[in-house]
Length: 202
Image (cartoon, rainbow, N blue to C red):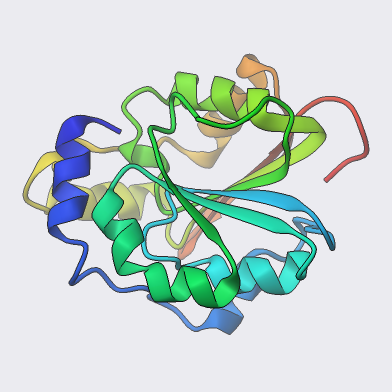
């Protein structure tokens, strides 16, 4: 994200909801992604810990979860959520991840993708840090058309942020080197699932 995005989300950190939907709904959105016991998971654009508990319930106590966000106040405001779920917060830029190559089994990005200024760089970094066969899941709780219409009404830097269609994003991921597994989009749904080549399907 840009410096302007960091300032924008830092300013909203205290009032930003930790979770907009029941945990059962978040659990349902992770169905089919095959997070396993002991998996290392990157939560990209984690904010205040919206996915923390749901991810922990899937990877168990032997797994590692890193919650990454560019807005340090968002991470600080979600400290209780992260501590309760045993999640490690990390403040850094998604286009330059401070993480070792081939160190994660899964990466999840919920509600954040259109805010990345350089999505191709983010894709390349995700490809780098995932192990062979590692899975990537990009989620939104509405269609790209719905989200873009909503963003256009907001003040500040996010008004210009646009989410491409799930089909287009799947094609872009494939062009970066991912194997595209599925893409689906509709009312209250946007899902793109991909995999780093090698290993077993995610």
